[in-house]
Image (tube, rainbow over all chains, first blue to last red; front, side, top):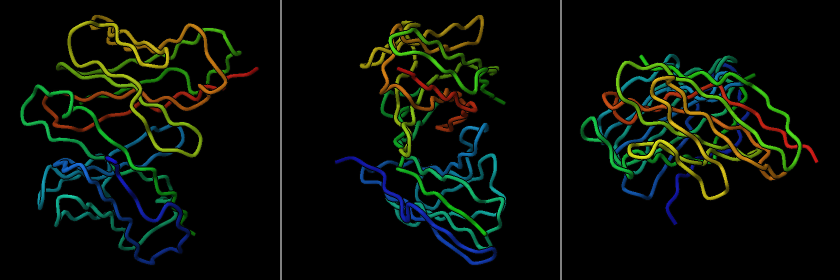
Length: 120
Length: 114
């Protein structure tokens, strides 16, 4: 079954304690992305990756790190979490669009189930 | 830069009544448009999308959306809602020149009442 998995699904931590949220996809997708969802703000992109070893900042990258050592995995790292990073996090993946015109496969992003993070 | 506005944060509606969720976007280039649905305590699922061709697109569960380029809108409609349509709905755009990045609106929470 084609899917994007995230772990953990729920996490309560304290300020400053490093944590990693894992994301894995089994669809051989080049493109992967992390979003955070906050009430009234929709989803905002944190970081994205166009392929292995290629990552770039999204709209709200402060306080986060990512890595893309393997095609299937795209972990999100919070080196020193703060309460303002309390949020619902989603990982997504898709085929990578190579130009300005996308195919159906390239424009369909698959989302993970979400990770609810509470930083005390 | 692209942006997406969903004008209604919450829409209460009675079962079997019609519903319209409004979405406007701003972009200087051609865009691809999407509606995602998030059921309670679940992730996002793609509801429907406009890439090209007919400006009226439909989903398998009775929703439809119409791309209006002159008004930069992509409103979502359903003629008769069910209790199971209770969810949050997100409009999103992807610009041709910005790779796969999706820009989301703030979401519209639909509460269907019996």
